[in-house]
Length: 145
Image: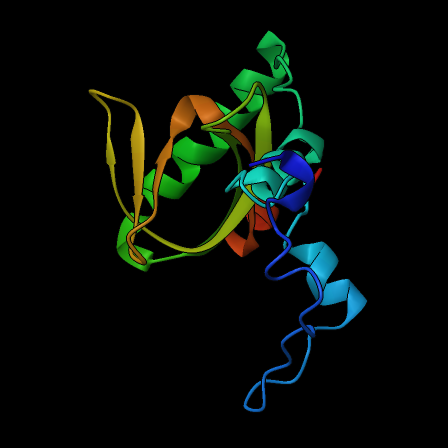
């Protein structure tokens, strides 16, 4: 059998059109053959690449002392349950850097052994990640607030 006669039995038959399903449009047909359709997670990877993170700044000794004084003041007045606002740095899990987060609430306790501040709302903040502490109690004792 020659190659030119291979499909001679069906070559002149009419094209089948379904009576149940409407034909696909051009865009739908093209989408079936999209080059990245098989790459699951492609969009997430692209958006992750462009997501920006902040670099962790280094505090000088004066700033560290200033924060330590403010934290000590809050701890001295724990029984008064002062509401404070703590700005701290959270390291990003996927890339270098991180972001600053602010938590407002009442300090439940401070663990001096591992340097962790426990807030009543369940937030745990490492003291070494703190970059600012504000609140009425701070303003009452420090003029620069």
